[in-house]
Amino acid sequence: MPPLRNASCAAGCALPLVKRGPPMSAFPMGRILPLKAQLNQHPVYGRVQSLDELHLFMQHHVYSVWDFMSLLKTLQHHVAPSGMPWLPRAHTAFARFINEIVVEEECDEGLPGPRGETTYSSHYQLYVDAMREVGANTAQVSQFVQRVGQEGVQTFLKVADVPEPARGFMQTTFGFIRTGKPHVVAAAFALGREHIIPPMFRALLQEMSIGADQAPIFHYYLERHIHLDGDHHGPLSMQLLESLCDGDPIKIREAEDAAIQAIQARIIFWYGVAEAITAQRMGRTLSKVVVPLRNRHSG
Image 1 (cartoon, helix red, strand yellow):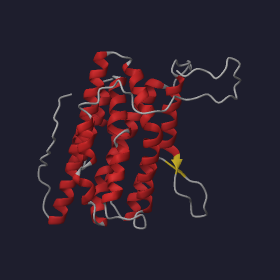
Image 2: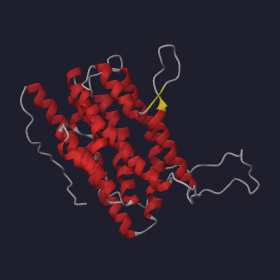
Image 3: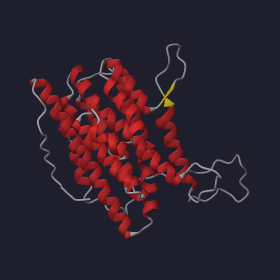
Image 4: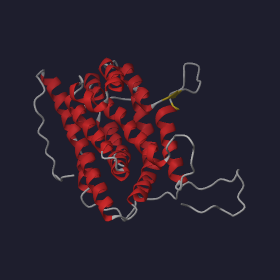
């Protein structure tokens, strides 16, 4: 925890949240970095060359936008739980960080309204709006979100009418949550989401052939995440991960394995999306995806 600026600091004093900086040097990245490099060079980013292909991409990707919130809410429950009676927490800086991300994810500033007024939207809803704007089908994901709340994730994921690559990705996400281990969830969140999203979205913006004039909300969504995750969320999420591991070699190893599994799941997911786009171009049924993972690890 960072120290108070002075012992007589009144309620109005600005307190530093957490010192920002590069990812923690102590965390083992040797097995993770090659997978991140493979993800950054994934062929899926260059497959989105038309609005029809953007539709298909978004109709897969929206499920990872949705399940992100369950990772985040699981961490919030551990770091800044709600309940009665309220009790003070030891690591208030991390509680502030998690609550800040929740605010940005659940009710962030959207694009200006028709009269220039400020609007607010969850990032999931912003993505669904982006899908509607370009004519992508939102009925499938809307029905999924409605029914999964009624029937439960573990049961409904097995039978839900969703793209198979998205189903596999979500099953991995909720597998992390079911471990009940905050350091595992934090690893999936920090290294499987916050650190990989900015370069991933930069690559998509650079390689896809869909301009901001064709999909303004989608471009806003991508650029917003590049800014938030790269400049702020990424470094702090690594500090949170370090705090939850607390120097324990077993926790560090479990976190490392979770990060590897999370990035592998994204690579496999993207190959599934790329194969679906190729199948659509060729007018054929989607075949089983063969994934050329260069670095396979258990965990």
